[in-house]
Length: 181
Image 1 (tube, rainbow, N blue to C red):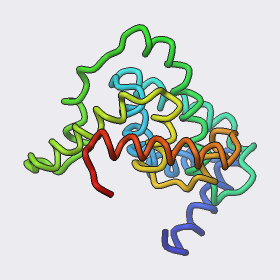
Image 2: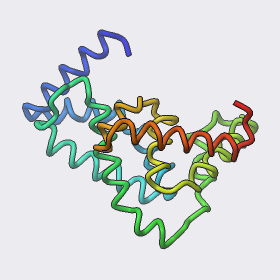
Image 3: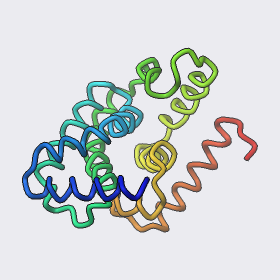
Image 4: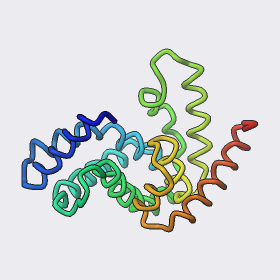
């Protein structure tokens, strides 16, 4: 991220902390799509994903004063979303939904790119087969690009545990997708 953009985001966080709803709205508008993509991939249901993101926005707006470092706004939002998504796990286990791959067409590939869409659907299906905790770590790393240390902070787990879970999950994903490296 560009230095000026970081400074602008930090200023918006400071304004939001002082009760400026417009500043929070601007911050949220810059991240909501990524939050939704993550929630959709994790929860495998469009309505659940929307609900989780909405609850995340509400919790974040009400708790923005607790955010210590303004530069960590995105990571903080994903930590909240992660907790919100976990609330859906009992329902996910009951439903075991698999029919949501078509919902991802707009978020995973450029329109008209059938090969990229097929690869994205295959990877998504493979990731969805993982247990929720491993799926969460994989999505934060692969879909959002967070480091193991950042993921550990978001999930409130030891960094070594996150690294080992990620390593095992990536190895299993490579085997599942038939990737040599």
